[in-house]
Length: 255
Image 1 (cartoon, helix red, strand yellow):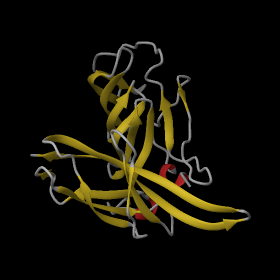
Image 2 (cartoon, helix red, strand yellow):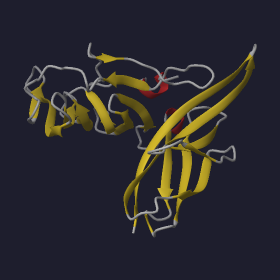
Image 3 (cartoon, one colour):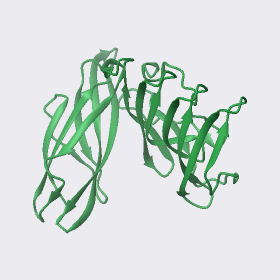
């Protein structure tokens, strides 16, 4: 199933080195290992490179520009981040986004075909200090139209992102391009302290919620995930349920 997101070869794929390992935390009743790209061991010891604290460029054998990366900053003593532009050999832009230690994509990445047309957008979401997840995928036809059948993404917005003390946060969720054929969504808010909160669901692909926001003035992040769920029915003695989480982290202010 993952092949529908990664079916076309990208000139500059994500690389997995010995200091990385593949892991799949994707399950509900059955296990479905599709979307966790790699486990990035930020706490491990890694060798410093010439790119550790500076911008750099790379070329193809014929001398044309292959990659140019602007140094953003250090993550810790052994790991660093760059914003990179990667090019097809004909000189057209192939990919743009942030990388950790030159190879591990993070955040939104934009991909282009060799002829210059937009190909895809992918969000690599950092779940924790040691885990990055292929969160959203938006693919485009050659004519620029969104290919929803080969995409999986959501929309989320607040009625207003700045609210008064004691006011609820009016929030709207919609799964614009579902991964499964006959699914619905649930919303889980991740708490900084205490138990997570599962919001009420009406069994559709959208949800409008009045969320109790922080009572104090300041800047906050609403964190959680949208679970897309498809019930496949009974298989023998097991009820088979497919589940794919899509994560969010959206800023709001209390004044």
